[in-house]
Length: 461
Image (cartoon, rainbow, N blue to C red; front, side):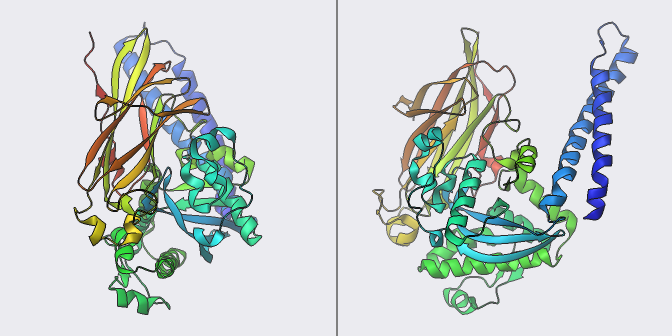
């Protein structure tokens, strides 16, 4: 930790020097240079630009990592494990909670709890009006719903306030991961065994007592619900798994390169999110997708996004398979147009209403027939654009239109019976950005690479 603090000024200086050199090279006009000179110059400029980006990231990390990892005293963070079986915009319902502490870089797991134990806030916490209009007052009422919004700084600061109101403890930040990230971690640490007081219930239910990178996702997102009907025992199992995984991490089990690779992969897929209550630290985090912000420097100019919020009130999202694709339409009056196409399929068995437990299907408690899945599909466009139309299976349909931080937002509810597929489309117009569009989606049980399809270009005259 001391070495990291000592290196920070040198890393910052190196980043500045390389950035200055890259800017000087970029200022050289190459049009009148001979190819023998222009080509190496362009290559050098590109390589320096890449090095600048890497060094800037390293300098930012070095500037905040020591303090965040407890170099100046222990730092406590609220850890949310998002459950992708019940979709929320940033991943899944934050069912399992825990306090993790960093002290001089050492990780330890403290108090474990659940979102249900936090209870309802009365009165509800104040959320900005735009997000409250889109996602309702539930954002500030229930820990389970703080991440109905895809904006993680909003979700995390709300979770921090709820935790403090419930326990009296004010945490230094909020971290979020999902079971898919746990699978990446276990691939590096190797298997962990359940050995605590929850072991008899686990064995009686036929759940694995040893979790690996291969079985942890289906176990935590499906099997635990079909084999343990009591929510309290489910919570005990989740707590036991979390304890063993973090014990493996804190003891240094596993190969460091594999751990870094797994956590990096999770970060790139939007499965690892970090928020700091320290404004200076958060201003650095906001530069990167790790912050989970829907606005600011981490968001590409022509960014589109599709987020999923469960409307079933159950754990049916484990069975939903999705693809999301951008379709660049022909320009209209000089403005870009882009359609966001979402295809969803309910892969639950035809007899899901009877073969799956009511805790998984919802049992019709929220107006959705057992076995069916209802999802609020939320589409974001770039700043200043407009949503022109929405379609379901090719037919125009009404939709809820909103604005969040100057970005247009469209919301549609889609219901799928077992085996049913539906395609939802939002067409955005008056797009002023001329950069290539990119796409962000809610991380689900599926690999993100299988969800996001390559951008398609329409044939234009």
